[in-house]
Length: 317
Length: 303
Image (tube, each protein chain N blue to C red):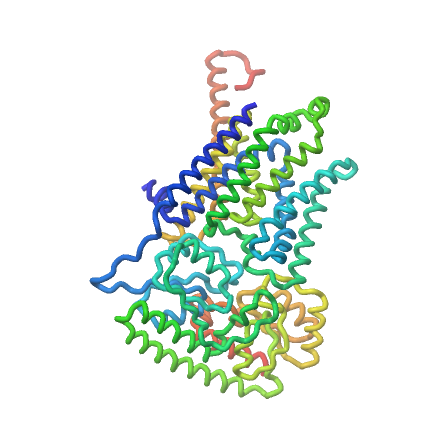
């Protein structure tokens, strides 16, 4: 048979090809950012999460050209890079990330793209809550944006980062930062007012997964438990986890379980039935990990937090 | 135009690496798929993609990302051995044995994952594949696995074929059939492990089944099937990456690269199917023509 010759031929050809490639030094380097001087080109920005991208839009306006990696309602765990994503990183001037260990894929993407520019960690200066003790949250609880004060810090970090890259527009970025900070302050006050309308003993939260720690801390809610115990959205619950949570819900007299837009509400519904409380999901689901798609109730950071608050207040009163 | 579609994307270093990895895996899968086809191991390959899962988890627990490949390798070989041993017992059929192994191993993986609640993105990468992120070291790993597999096939290919076509004859010649089966199962397992990083556990089976199936549609001759399978595997890697690049960069359509490679492979299979069907159709026509020309009564021979 000719299998032998055939296999050896393929092995030989492949080895030769690989050697040529290795010795050739891998050819071209990443496209260098051109267009300096003359008409100032917008800063090329890659933002990882939907929230960070929204902040960047508010700060950068039309002076940045923005690529957002994670899409609305997509669990960051299910992210698979497209060639366009890696290309955008390769050609970017600045990469903006949420930080606190949320973007596990980013290091690989950056090294694969050959990007060696500035990576702005928007969580710089935010007081990080301790994680839930899993490896996943070794660096702390990554859902920092659910406190508008943290959002202010994140937006400010973005403004500073963009100004470093594009000093000519620094004044504009600063103005936008100030204007946006005012909106975030207003949001913060509004959420507080609305939560205050709830009776004190009803300010208790059961959610589908543990994404609202910063929100709970900021507005002095009591966190009863979550259906999925960690940021890790793939693990399954044991029978005991479920009974424990049902017992807790009954003991504390919580009125509702809040499901999230990026997660299937199935287990939450089971627990809701067992505990005899309603499960709020579907259209009204909370936005936990991502913003909603354009046109939805949570398409910007501001509307998302308003929507979450409205849903929580309606559900608990 | 064609240059822009099929060559230009690969000027970028990360696309270059992805292409080399895809070509290596595609061609390797092409060769091995011929044996998978001959020995009817499609379900075995599928089972192996699941039985490596606990190895992936354990490897990660022991040594983080570094450990994944070794854990997968260990469990791949382990399940190849178990499979061979268990199917030597004729009372339970091989497909039942396989189903038991597959579900048993996979549930071990799920139990481990749920115990630890630290099933992170690194592991999820194994479900979906990350061919755009392969680095030089991983390409070299794939090449080494490929070399091992091809050299083994060069040495044992004749015996594998004998085993496939005439097991009784092979046994009479003194070959130990279980050992041959084990060797082939281990080879399949090696390819599974090598390819899992690139296309993910769910899609790796395609690389081990589709190329030879496409080749089989085109010919009865083994050499032709082999050549077609290798060509299909390699071309699918190339076209798939190019399509994924084109769609995501110029048309804003996110096509996951690993999945697009598999789609390209299935597309080539469909093409082979069309060609084969067309040829059959033409053959029948030719036969009718000759029939009419000769004016003979119908019957007997086939074109």
